[in-house]
Image (cartoon, rainbow, N blue to C red; front, top):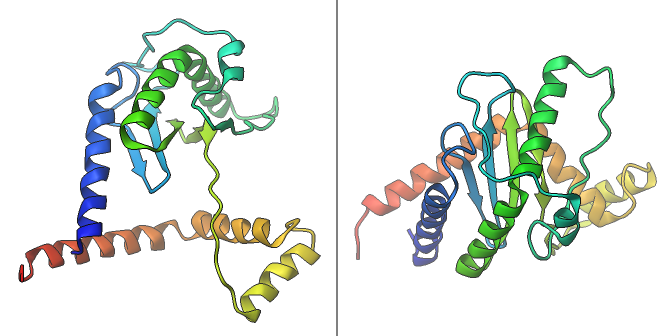
Length: 208
């Protein structure tokens, strides 16, 4: 394992430990998922459905929308929640309503925690919850990524633009990445697991 990889893994563990200790215990069921990369920390916790046994109740009082207008973390913008049809299944509506209630009730505390984490680790903080089978992200942090593509790859992007799927090459590239993430979850999970095994083998190898 290289020094850079070792430092990266250690930092990720430190961040997960920090959030595990810092977040109120009554917020989520179990330990929240904490995802770390070079620019962002994403915290995703599981909520109980309304009326379920042991449903966690946020400790803070509900805040007005003025706090939301100020931003849940500096430099971040709320992700559009999307219109939810009135004909949505009851369980889906319950999950979405539960997520929105949690968002409103914990807004002030989440802002405080996010600012502390940003000062400590130099990364923006995004929040999300899983309730039932619904995953709701409250905030996202967009980062420009530069890449070089050969003509066949550029033609794929141009086809998506010409077909109206995307408005630009950069939007088409983002669309492709989202599509892979949605439809290749198991493959990506296997790939990450394989990388973890490689790191373990490297750690067990000669130190010279």
